[in-house]
Amino acid sequence: MTTLYDCDVLDQASLLTPAEQAAILRLRATLDEDVRPLVNEYWSRDEFPEQVIPKLTGLNLMNPHEIIDAGETPSDLFAGFRTFELARCDASMSTFYNAVAGLFRTTINLGGSPEQAAAMDPLVQTFELFGVFCLTEAEHGSDIAGGLATTAERNGDTWTINGNKRWIGGVWVADTLAIFARDVADAQVKCFLVPKNTPGVSYTKIMNKASLKIMQNADITLDNVKVDDSTRLLNINSFADVAGLLRNMRSMVSWIACGVMAGAYEAAVAYTKERQQFGKPIASFQLIQEKLARMLANLTAGLAMTVRLTQQQQEGTFVDANSAMCKMQTSLLMRETVALAREVVGGNGIVVDYDVARFFADAEAIYSYEGTHEINALVVGRSITGVGSFK
Ligand SMILES: Cc1cc2nc3c(=O)[nH]c(=O)nc-3n(C[C@H](O)[C@H](O)[C@H](O)COP(=O)(O)OP(=O)(O)OC[C@H]3O[C@@H](n4cnc5c(N)ncnc54)[C@H](O)[C@@H]3O)c2cc1C
Image 1 (cartoon, helix red, strand yellow):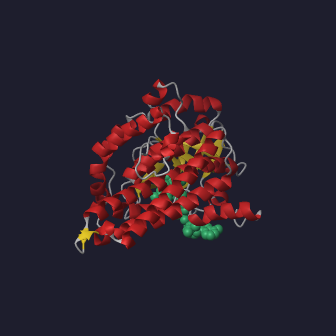
Image 2 (cartoon, rainbow, N blue to C red; image 1 turned 45 degrees about the horizontal axis):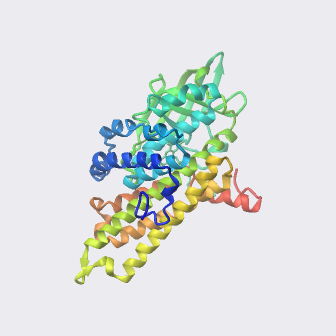
Image 3 (cartoon, rainbow, N blue to C red; image 1 turned 120 degrees about the vertical axis):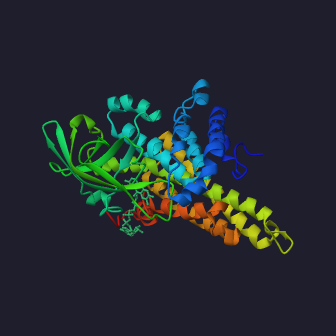
Protein backbone atom coordinates (compact mmCIF):
# COMPACT_ATOMS: atom_id res chain seq x y z
CA MET A 1 0.00 0.00 0.00
CA THR A 2 1.61 3.28 -1.06
CA THR A 3 1.14 6.60 0.69
CA LEU A 4 0.20 8.91 -2.16
CA TYR A 5 0.84 7.23 -5.51
CA ASP A 6 0.26 3.72 -6.86
CA CYS A 7 3.15 4.37 -9.25
CA ASP A 8 5.53 5.13 -6.34
CA VAL A 9 6.25 1.46 -5.69
CA LEU A 10 9.09 2.11 -3.23
CA ASP A 11 6.76 4.45 -1.33
CA GLN A 12 9.19 7.33 -1.48
CA ALA A 13 6.36 9.76 -0.70
CA SER A 14 6.18 8.21 2.77
CA LEU A 15 9.20 10.41 3.56
CA LEU A 16 6.75 13.31 3.64
CA THR A 17 5.05 14.11 6.93
CA PRO A 18 1.28 13.53 7.21
CA ALA A 19 0.75 17.30 7.05
CA GLU A 20 2.84 17.54 3.87
CA GLN A 21 0.89 14.67 2.34
CA ALA A 22 -2.37 16.43 3.19
CA ALA A 23 -1.18 19.57 1.38
CA ILE A 24 -0.29 17.48 -1.69
CA LEU A 25 -3.77 15.94 -1.66
CA ARG A 26 -5.31 19.43 -1.52
CA LEU A 27 -3.26 20.38 -4.59
CA ARG A 28 -4.36 17.19 -6.34
CA ALA A 29 -8.03 17.98 -5.74
CA THR A 30 -7.63 21.38 -7.42
CA LEU A 31 -5.69 19.90 -10.31
CA ASP A 32 -8.29 17.18 -10.87
CA GLU A 33 -11.21 19.57 -10.73
CA ASP A 34 -9.92 22.80 -12.29
CA VAL A 35 -6.86 22.02 -14.36
CA ARG A 36 -6.85 18.49 -15.77
CA PRO A 37 -10.09 18.99 -17.75
CA LEU A 38 -8.55 21.98 -19.59
CA VAL A 39 -5.01 20.97 -20.46
CA ASN A 40 -5.46 19.05 -23.70
CA GLU A 41 -7.70 21.71 -25.22
CA TYR A 42 -5.38 24.58 -24.24
CA TRP A 43 -2.32 22.65 -25.38
CA SER A 44 -3.86 22.36 -28.83
CA ARG A 45 -4.75 26.06 -28.79
CA ASP A 46 -1.21 27.05 -27.78
CA GLU A 47 -2.62 29.03 -24.85
CA PHE A 48 -2.31 29.12 -21.06
CA PRO A 49 -5.68 28.76 -19.25
CA GLU A 50 -5.29 31.94 -17.21
CA GLN A 51 -8.36 31.10 -15.13
CA VAL A 52 -6.32 28.46 -13.29
CA ILE A 53 -3.70 30.94 -12.06
CA PRO A 54 -5.70 32.26 -9.05
CA LYS A 55 -6.72 28.69 -8.21
CA LEU A 56 -3.10 27.52 -8.10
CA THR A 57 -1.62 30.60 -6.42
CA GLY A 58 -4.55 30.75 -3.96
CA LEU A 59 -3.59 27.33 -2.57
CA ASN A 60 -0.68 29.02 -0.76
CA LEU A 61 1.44 25.96 -1.41
CA MET A 62 4.74 27.64 -0.66
CA ASN A 63 3.51 27.93 2.92
CA PRO A 64 0.61 25.46 3.28
CA HIS A 65 -1.68 25.78 6.29
CA GLU A 66 -1.57 22.03 6.96
CA ILE A 67 2.19 22.19 7.49
CA ILE A 68 2.17 25.44 9.47
CA ASP A 69 -0.68 24.21 11.70
CA ALA A 70 1.35 21.07 12.45
CA GLY A 71 4.20 23.29 13.68
CA GLU A 72 6.45 22.28 10.78
CA THR A 73 8.34 24.13 8.07
CA PRO A 74 7.74 23.00 4.46
CA SER A 75 10.69 20.77 3.56
CA ASP A 76 12.57 20.63 0.26
CA LEU A 77 11.03 17.18 -0.24
CA PHE A 78 7.58 18.75 0.05
CA ALA A 79 8.52 21.31 -2.61
CA GLY A 80 9.72 18.41 -4.74
CA PHE A 81 6.55 16.35 -4.46
CA ARG A 82 4.50 19.54 -5.03
CA THR A 83 6.34 19.93 -8.33
CA PHE A 84 5.94 16.21 -9.09
CA GLU A 85 2.18 16.43 -8.51
CA LEU A 86 1.87 19.44 -10.82
CA ALA A 87 3.95 17.78 -13.56
CA ARG A 88 2.01 14.52 -13.24
CA CYS A 89 -1.00 16.58 -14.31
CA ASP A 90 0.79 18.76 -16.87
CA ALA A 91 4.40 19.76 -17.51
CA SER A 92 3.47 23.37 -18.30
CA MET A 93 1.67 23.77 -14.97
CA SER A 94 4.74 22.61 -13.06
CA THR A 95 7.01 24.79 -15.18
CA PHE A 96 4.76 27.79 -14.58
CA TYR A 97 4.60 27.26 -10.81
CA ASN A 98 8.32 26.53 -10.64
CA ALA A 99 9.15 29.75 -12.51
CA VAL A 100 8.07 31.63 -9.38
CA ALA A 101 8.36 29.08 -6.54
CA GLY A 102 11.68 27.68 -7.80
CA LEU A 103 13.63 29.99 -10.09
CA PHE A 104 12.51 33.40 -8.88
CA ARG A 105 12.27 32.49 -5.20
CA THR A 106 15.74 30.94 -5.22
CA THR A 107 17.07 34.05 -6.96
CA ILE A 108 15.61 36.25 -4.21
CA ASN A 109 16.66 34.09 -1.29
CA LEU A 110 20.19 33.25 -2.41
CA GLY A 111 20.85 36.29 -4.59
CA GLY A 112 19.44 38.89 -2.23
CA SER A 113 21.12 40.16 0.91
CA PRO A 114 19.55 38.79 4.13
CA GLU A 115 17.56 42.04 4.40
CA GLN A 116 16.39 41.86 0.77
CA ALA A 117 15.39 38.21 1.13
CA ALA A 118 13.54 38.85 4.40
CA ALA A 119 11.59 41.70 2.83
CA MET A 120 10.71 40.02 -0.43
CA ASP A 121 10.33 36.29 0.27
CA PRO A 122 6.94 36.62 2.03
CA LEU A 123 5.63 38.49 -1.02
CA VAL A 124 6.97 35.84 -3.38
CA GLN A 125 5.29 33.11 -1.34
CA THR A 126 1.89 34.71 -1.88
CA PHE A 127 2.63 35.63 -5.52
CA GLU A 128 2.20 39.33 -4.63
CA LEU A 129 5.70 39.66 -6.00
CA PHE A 130 5.43 37.68 -9.23
CA GLY A 131 8.81 37.43 -10.90
CA VAL A 132 10.54 35.40 -13.58
CA PHE A 133 14.16 34.41 -14.20
CA CYS A 134 15.76 36.05 -17.25
CA LEU A 135 19.20 34.65 -18.02
CA THR A 136 19.24 33.12 -21.52
CA GLU A 137 19.83 35.35 -24.55
CA ALA A 138 19.18 34.90 -28.27
CA GLU A 139 22.89 34.41 -29.00
CA HIS A 140 23.86 32.77 -25.70
CA GLY A 141 22.28 29.61 -24.26
CA SER A 142 24.79 26.97 -23.16
CA ASP A 143 27.64 29.48 -23.24
CA ILE A 144 25.83 32.10 -21.17
CA ALA A 145 28.51 32.12 -18.45
CA GLY A 146 31.16 33.68 -20.66
CA GLY A 147 28.85 34.98 -23.35
CA LEU A 148 26.22 36.96 -21.46
CA ALA A 149 26.02 40.16 -23.49
CA THR A 150 23.26 42.21 -21.84
CA THR A 151 24.98 45.22 -20.27
CA ALA A 152 24.35 47.32 -17.17
CA GLU A 153 26.01 50.70 -16.76
CA ARG A 154 25.95 52.63 -13.51
CA ASN A 155 25.61 56.39 -13.33
CA GLY A 156 25.10 57.56 -9.74
CA ASP A 157 22.28 55.49 -8.31
CA THR A 158 20.82 54.68 -11.74
CA TRP A 159 21.67 51.66 -13.89
CA THR A 160 20.99 51.57 -17.65
CA ILE A 161 20.38 48.08 -19.06
CA ASN A 162 20.63 47.16 -22.74
CA GLY A 163 20.32 43.77 -24.40
CA ASN A 164 17.90 40.90 -24.91
CA LYS A 165 16.60 37.75 -23.23
CA ARG A 166 15.13 34.67 -24.90
CA TRP A 167 12.87 31.81 -23.83
CA ILE A 168 11.67 33.51 -20.66
CA GLY A 169 8.65 31.65 -19.25
CA GLY A 170 5.71 33.40 -17.59
CA VAL A 171 6.53 36.95 -18.69
CA TRP A 172 2.95 37.70 -19.69
CA VAL A 173 1.68 37.34 -16.11
CA ALA A 174 4.78 38.41 -14.18
CA ASP A 175 5.21 41.91 -12.79
CA THR A 176 8.98 41.67 -12.20
CA LEU A 177 11.84 40.47 -14.38
CA ALA A 178 15.02 39.22 -12.69
CA ILE A 179 17.43 40.39 -15.39
CA PHE A 180 21.04 39.20 -15.41
CA ALA A 181 23.36 41.74 -16.99
CA ARG A 182 27.09 42.35 -17.22
CA ASP A 183 28.38 45.44 -15.42
CA VAL A 184 30.42 47.39 -17.99
CA ALA A 185 32.67 48.68 -15.19
CA ASP A 186 33.99 45.34 -13.88
CA ALA A 187 32.62 42.85 -16.50
CA GLN A 188 30.89 40.86 -13.72
CA VAL A 189 27.31 39.54 -13.96
CA LYS A 190 24.74 41.22 -11.68
CA CYS A 191 21.00 40.82 -11.26
CA PHE A 192 18.33 43.54 -11.29
CA LEU A 193 14.65 43.22 -10.40
CA VAL A 194 13.18 45.20 -13.28
CA PRO A 195 9.46 46.07 -13.13
CA LYS A 196 7.99 44.75 -16.37
CA ASN A 197 6.32 48.08 -17.15
CA THR A 198 9.62 50.04 -17.06
CA PRO A 199 10.06 52.15 -20.23
CA GLY A 200 12.34 50.35 -22.70
CA VAL A 201 11.13 46.81 -21.78
CA SER A 202 9.26 45.03 -24.58
CA TYR A 203 8.51 41.38 -25.21
CA THR A 204 6.99 39.10 -27.82
CA LYS A 205 5.62 35.57 -27.56
CA ILE A 206 7.72 32.79 -29.09
CA MET A 207 5.39 31.33 -31.70
CA ASN A 208 4.97 27.87 -33.23
CA LYS A 209 6.43 25.78 -30.39
CA ALA A 210 5.91 22.02 -30.69
CA SER A 211 6.60 21.37 -26.99
CA LEU A 212 5.30 22.79 -23.70
CA LYS A 213 2.70 24.64 -25.75
CA ILE A 214 0.61 25.71 -22.73
CA MET A 215 3.49 27.54 -21.07
CA GLN A 216 4.16 30.75 -22.96
CA ASN A 217 7.76 31.88 -23.52
CA ALA A 218 8.95 35.30 -24.59
CA ASP A 219 11.75 37.16 -26.26
CA ILE A 220 12.51 40.30 -24.25
CA THR A 221 14.22 43.45 -25.51
CA LEU A 222 15.85 45.86 -23.05
CA ASP A 223 16.44 49.24 -24.66
CA ASN A 224 18.02 51.84 -22.36
CA VAL A 225 16.05 50.50 -19.39
CA LYS A 226 16.74 52.64 -16.31
CA VAL A 227 16.46 51.18 -12.81
CA ASP A 228 17.52 52.33 -9.36
CA ASP A 229 20.45 50.68 -7.57
CA SER A 230 17.96 49.45 -4.94
CA THR A 231 16.67 46.92 -7.53
CA ARG A 232 20.05 45.13 -7.60
CA LEU A 233 20.33 41.83 -5.72
CA LEU A 234 23.34 42.34 -3.53
CA ASN A 235 24.65 38.76 -3.35
CA ILE A 236 25.03 38.33 -7.10
CA ASN A 237 28.38 39.77 -8.06
CA SER A 238 29.75 37.27 -10.60
CA PHE A 239 28.65 34.37 -12.77
CA ALA A 240 29.84 32.02 -10.01
CA ASP A 241 26.97 33.40 -7.92
CA VAL A 242 24.54 32.69 -10.79
CA ALA A 243 25.93 29.15 -11.05
CA GLY A 244 25.13 28.76 -7.34
CA LEU A 245 21.50 29.56 -8.13
CA LEU A 246 21.39 27.08 -11.03
CA ARG A 247 22.89 24.34 -8.85
CA ASN A 248 20.01 24.77 -6.41
CA MET A 249 17.34 24.93 -9.12
CA ARG A 250 18.28 21.86 -11.13
CA SER A 251 16.77 19.34 -8.74
CA MET A 252 13.36 20.87 -9.44
CA VAL A 253 13.70 19.99 -13.11
CA SER A 254 14.38 16.41 -12.04
CA TRP A 255 11.11 16.51 -10.09
CA ILE A 256 9.34 17.78 -13.21
CA ALA A 257 10.90 14.96 -15.27
CA CYS A 258 9.69 12.41 -12.69
CA GLY A 259 6.18 13.92 -12.68
CA VAL A 260 6.04 13.72 -16.47
CA MET A 261 7.07 10.06 -16.29
CA ALA A 262 4.31 9.40 -13.75
CA GLY A 263 1.65 11.16 -15.85
CA ALA A 264 2.64 9.35 -19.03
CA TYR A 265 2.90 5.97 -17.26
CA GLU A 266 -0.48 6.29 -15.59
CA ALA A 267 -2.19 7.31 -18.84
CA ALA A 268 -0.51 4.40 -20.65
CA VAL A 269 -1.50 1.81 -18.03
CA ALA A 270 -5.13 2.97 -18.07
CA TYR A 271 -5.25 2.83 -21.87
CA THR A 272 -3.74 -0.64 -22.15
CA LYS A 273 -6.28 -2.02 -19.69
CA GLU A 274 -9.15 -0.59 -21.75
CA ARG A 275 -7.96 -1.18 -25.29
CA GLN A 276 -8.89 -4.59 -26.70
CA GLN A 277 -7.07 -6.31 -29.57
CA PHE A 278 -7.19 -9.98 -30.54
CA GLY A 279 -10.15 -10.25 -28.15
CA LYS A 280 -8.16 -9.24 -25.06
CA PRO A 281 -6.97 -6.07 -23.32
CA ILE A 282 -3.59 -5.20 -24.80
CA ALA A 283 -2.32 -5.00 -21.18
CA SER A 284 -2.35 -8.80 -21.18
CA PHE A 285 0.29 -9.07 -23.93
CA GLN A 286 3.83 -9.85 -22.80
CA LEU A 287 5.47 -7.24 -25.02
CA ILE A 288 3.17 -4.52 -23.66
CA GLN A 289 3.88 -5.59 -20.08
CA GLU A 290 7.63 -5.41 -20.71
CA LYS A 291 7.23 -1.76 -21.77
CA LEU A 292 5.08 -0.93 -18.75
CA ALA A 293 7.70 -2.54 -16.52
CA ARG A 294 10.48 -0.43 -18.05
CA MET A 295 8.42 2.72 -17.61
CA LEU A 296 7.76 1.95 -13.95
CA ALA A 297 11.42 1.07 -13.34
CA ASN A 298 12.52 4.34 -14.98
CA LEU A 299 10.14 6.34 -12.81
CA THR A 300 11.23 4.53 -9.65
CA ALA A 301 14.94 5.03 -10.38
CA GLY A 302 14.43 8.68 -11.29
CA LEU A 303 12.45 9.34 -8.13
CA ALA A 304 15.00 7.59 -5.92
CA MET A 305 17.84 9.69 -7.31
CA THR A 306 15.84 12.90 -7.07
CA VAL A 307 14.64 12.23 -3.52
CA ARG A 308 18.18 11.57 -2.30
CA LEU A 309 19.57 14.66 -4.05
CA THR A 310 16.80 16.75 -2.49
CA GLN A 311 17.57 15.37 0.97
CA GLN A 312 21.22 16.32 0.48
CA GLN A 313 20.16 19.75 -0.77
CA GLN A 314 18.14 20.27 2.41
CA GLU A 315 21.13 19.14 4.50
CA GLY A 316 23.42 21.46 2.52
CA THR A 317 25.69 18.57 1.55
CA PHE A 318 24.95 18.19 -2.16
CA VAL A 319 27.52 18.86 -4.87
CA ASP A 320 27.16 20.52 -8.25
CA ALA A 321 28.03 17.41 -10.26
CA ASN A 322 25.26 15.40 -8.57
CA SER A 323 22.61 17.97 -9.33
CA ALA A 324 23.76 18.02 -12.98
CA MET A 325 23.85 14.20 -13.09
CA CYS A 326 20.34 13.97 -11.65
CA LYS A 327 18.91 16.45 -14.21
CA MET A 328 20.77 14.61 -17.01
CA GLN A 329 19.66 11.11 -15.98
CA THR A 330 16.04 11.82 -15.05
CA SER A 331 15.66 13.62 -18.40
CA LEU A 332 17.03 10.59 -20.26
CA LEU A 333 14.71 8.28 -18.30
CA MET A 334 11.81 10.63 -19.02
CA ARG A 335 12.52 10.67 -22.74
CA GLU A 336 12.50 6.86 -22.91
CA THR A 337 9.41 6.60 -20.70
CA VAL A 338 7.23 9.01 -22.68
CA ALA A 339 8.28 7.29 -25.91
CA LEU A 340 7.23 3.91 -24.48
CA ALA A 341 3.93 5.41 -23.29
CA ARG A 342 3.29 6.85 -26.71
CA GLU A 343 4.14 3.47 -28.26
CA VAL A 344 1.75 1.34 -26.19
CA VAL A 345 -1.12 3.71 -26.98
CA GLY A 346 -0.60 3.03 -30.70
CA GLY A 347 -2.11 5.50 -33.17
CA ASN A 348 -3.99 7.23 -30.38
CA GLY A 349 -0.59 7.92 -28.84
CA ILE A 350 -0.18 10.81 -31.24
CA VAL A 351 -3.64 12.26 -30.47
CA VAL A 352 -3.54 14.85 -27.68
CA ASP A 353 -6.91 13.70 -26.26
CA TYR A 354 -5.24 10.57 -24.86
CA ASP A 355 -2.73 12.58 -22.76
CA VAL A 356 0.44 10.68 -23.65
CA ALA A 357 1.04 12.79 -26.80
CA ARG A 358 1.16 15.93 -24.64
CA PHE A 359 3.66 14.37 -22.20
CA PHE A 360 5.67 13.01 -25.15
CA ALA A 361 5.98 16.42 -26.83
CA ASP A 362 6.48 18.39 -23.60
CA ALA A 363 9.36 16.17 -22.50
CA GLU A 364 11.53 17.67 -25.23
CA ALA A 365 11.49 21.15 -23.66
CA ILE A 366 12.39 19.75 -20.25
CA TYR A 367 15.20 17.75 -21.82
CA SER A 368 16.76 21.04 -23.01
CA TYR A 369 15.98 23.68 -20.42
CA GLU A 370 18.07 24.49 -17.33
CA GLY A 371 21.11 22.93 -18.94
CA THR A 372 20.97 20.61 -21.93
CA HIS A 373 21.92 16.95 -21.70
CA GLU A 374 25.38 17.72 -23.07
CA ILE A 375 26.12 20.59 -20.69
CA ASN A 376 25.02 18.62 -17.63
CA ALA A 377 27.05 15.62 -18.83
CA LEU A 378 30.09 17.89 -19.19
CA VAL A 379 29.65 19.12 -15.60
CA VAL A 380 29.69 15.48 -14.48
CA GLY A 381 32.61 14.72 -16.81
CA ARG A 382 34.62 17.58 -15.32
CA SER A 383 34.01 16.15 -11.87
CA ILE A 384 35.08 12.64 -12.94
CA THR A 385 38.22 13.65 -14.81
CA GLY A 386 39.23 16.90 -13.19
CA VAL A 387 39.40 18.36 -16.71
CA GLY A 388 36.88 21.00 -17.77
CA SER A 389 35.90 20.68 -21.43
CA PHE A 390 34.02 23.96 -21.54
CA LYS A 391 33.93 27.25 -19.68
C1 LIG B 1 10.63 25.80 -22.97
C2 LIG B 1 11.84 26.50 -22.47
C3 LIG B 1 11.75 27.33 -21.36
C4 LIG B 1 12.86 28.06 -20.93
N1 LIG B 1 12.72 28.93 -19.88
C5 LIG B 1 13.76 29.75 -19.55
C6 LIG B 1 13.60 30.76 -18.56
O1 LIG B 1 12.52 30.91 -17.96
N2 LIG B 1 14.68 31.56 -18.28
C7 LIG B 1 15.88 31.44 -18.92
O2 LIG B 1 16.79 32.21 -18.63
N3 LIG B 1 16.05 30.48 -19.88
C8 LIG B 1 15.02 29.64 -20.21
N4 LIG B 1 15.20 28.66 -21.18
C9 LIG B 1 16.48 28.58 -21.88
C10 LIG B 1 17.22 27.26 -21.70
O3 LIG B 1 17.85 27.19 -20.46
C11 LIG B 1 18.18 27.11 -22.90
O4 LIG B 1 17.38 26.78 -24.02
C12 LIG B 1 19.25 26.06 -22.69
O5 LIG B 1 20.19 26.51 -21.74
C13 LIG B 1 20.00 25.72 -23.99
O6 LIG B 1 20.39 26.86 -24.68
P1 LIG B 1 20.06 26.99 -26.26
O7 LIG B 1 18.63 26.65 -26.45
O8 LIG B 1 20.51 28.33 -26.68
O9 LIG B 1 20.89 25.85 -26.97
P2 LIG B 1 22.42 25.95 -27.47
O10 LIG B 1 23.28 26.42 -26.37
O11 LIG B 1 22.47 26.68 -28.76
O12 LIG B 1 22.75 24.42 -27.72
C14 LIG B 1 22.39 23.71 -28.94
C15 LIG B 1 22.98 22.31 -28.83
O13 LIG B 1 24.41 22.38 -28.76
C16 LIG B 1 24.86 21.67 -27.62
N5 LIG B 1 26.09 22.27 -27.07
C17 LIG B 1 26.31 23.58 -26.76
N6 LIG B 1 27.55 23.73 -26.27
C18 LIG B 1 28.13 22.51 -26.25
C19 LIG B 1 29.39 22.00 -25.86
N7 LIG B 1 30.35 22.78 -25.34
N8 LIG B 1 29.64 20.68 -26.02
C20 LIG B 1 28.68 19.86 -26.51
N9 LIG B 1 27.47 20.26 -26.91
C21 LIG B 1 27.18 21.58 -26.77
C22 LIG B 1 23.70 21.75 -26.64
O14 LIG B 1 23.79 20.74 -25.64
C23 LIG B 1 22.52 21.56 -27.58
O15 LIG B 1 22.35 20.21 -27.87
C24 LIG B 1 14.10 27.92 -21.60
C25 LIG B 1 14.18 27.05 -22.71
C26 LIG B 1 13.08 26.37 -23.15
C27 LIG B 1 13.21 25.48 -24.37
